[in-house]
Length: 124
Length: 124
Image (cartoon, rainbow over all chains, first blue to last red; front, side, top):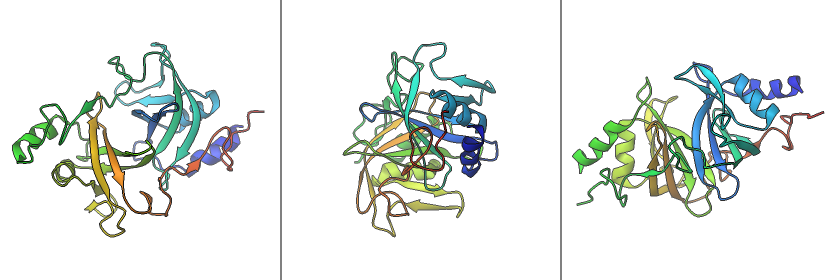
């Protein structure tokens, strides 16, 4: 198993810090839940455990999503993009959702034209 | 208009190269189409034109998605995440799709358990 997943991981293009962006999308309704970073070892752990493992840049440590909060993500599908420098995990999201704020998705703040916030761009 | 969008852009957390990841998602069916990078000026252009503008790290230039291919993206909704370090644009995708390979989404290559590719992890 190790050798096969390693072969795949060698194809990925990690950045200068050894990291690759990983998007998590809800398996049920397609909601984009979050984006976080993985290194080669967290990709490997994700493949082997079926749960999302990220690398925390601020804490410089691995974190398995939901391990403390209970808001776990179980991987249903996984994709890499045409440039092999971004990953997409389609996940079954448990618990309250993906965001540490309590929101279901981390992308809960709208901006731009039409958004009801101070970020609205006045088209006038 | 300039000042309002500038106020918003100042809240964003660009990385050490002045860039922020921007995910594009299909407005019609929720497909995650692509991930590319924006700097403050491409965020501003995206807000002002209603089309996605990215910064090409390899070519070191702005690119308006679909300007040459015709596969344009019109922004319907825009979100920033809880950490203000990733953007999500929900777009109306014109033409053949988002990927330069001709695929509709850049995330067309599956990997991991269950994927029909050489990246399959043998669970045995």
